[in-house]
Image (tube, rainbow, N blue to C red):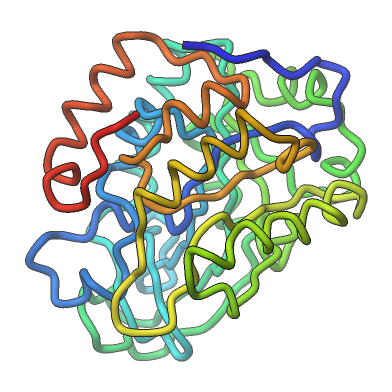
Length: 304
C-alpha cells in the first residue's frame, strides 16, 4: 500500500510521518500493575514499524548514570511511574535491520524526557533514588545512538531548514537504511500538547486549531491526535483512529502535517501511514495484523 509520497523538496518540518505516542509503552507487560495508566501501544517498536509507524516518541532514562543501560520510561514528576526492562542497545538494532530492509523509508526517533538515576531503573511504581532530568542532546545520549549506527541531528536550526531530501541524505546509515534521532519535546520539536482534549469529540477541533498555526511556526511539530489522559487509565480509541484516517483521506484537515501522533498503532496505522505516503508492503501489513491479534481482541482494533 502506498499513498502519494511527499516531494523531496518539501521541508522536513512539513513532511508527513505517522508517529506513536509514548511508543515504548508497547513493552509494558499484561500483568504489570502500571499497565492501565501507562500503556498507549500494544506492539514492540519493531512491530509498530511493520504497522506503518515511521516516527517514535521515545523517553529515556539511564540506570546508575550509565548510558550503556539506557531504558525507556513513562513517568510523572520525580520519577514515579513505569520503566522498561528493555534498553536502547537491545531494541534499536532490530529497527536498524528493518530500516536496511526498507531503504526508501525514513524512520525518525524523537527523543525527549531524558533522565538518569543514581540507582537501578526499577520497574513499578517506586521512583528510583536520585532521579534527575538531563539533556537529550548531551554527549552520552547522542553516543548511545551513534554507536549503533543511527544518524543524529541535534541542531534545531538545521532541522528547521532542511528539505526532506536533505534529511533523507543525512539519515542514510553506513550500511543502508535511513534512521534519524532528533531532540523532541523541550528540544527541537513543538509538541502542541493540550491537556483539555479529554474526549473523542474534542479531537477534531484540536487538530483544526493546531493545523491552522503549526505548519508555519518554523520548526518540526506534532499533532497529538489522541484523547489526553485525565484518570488512571489511558483512553485509547480505535474509533478515533478510524476518524483520523477519514480526516486524512477525505478532507484537508491534515494538509501540511509533520508528525501525526496517535495511540494504539494496532488501529488503522497502516491505512493512515499509507495515506501519508509511506510504502507498506503486503508482508508488513500481514505481519501487523498477526502481531495485533491480542490487541484486536481487547480493543476492537483489527482494521488496518
